Image 1: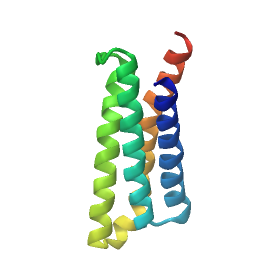
Image 2: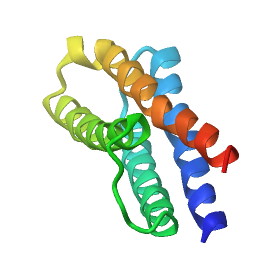
Image 3: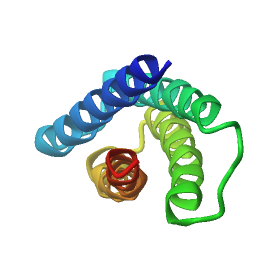
Image 4: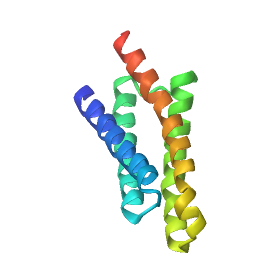
Length: 122
């Protein structure tokens, strides 16, 4: 189960990082970015769920638990908002969306890193 959890979290890291940074470097939000964001959320949710099963299914009110929950909510909101921006074809938002993407990506890194630290200390 741990291998499954780590694999999905790692896939989320790759997908989300590629999506966010290619959007930033390309200077424009595109449909494939939104698709990658959704797959990133899916992989992160599966990996987080598997980690929860390993941990006994108990949500912990600590930095890792709170930022992890916030990160998944933000990632889902981010993917949905990217879809809204793309559907509206708002040129100003299409070229500035990367600022929000980077913010969400940085927030997501907090539980990722804290999970690696907590996991390696057990």
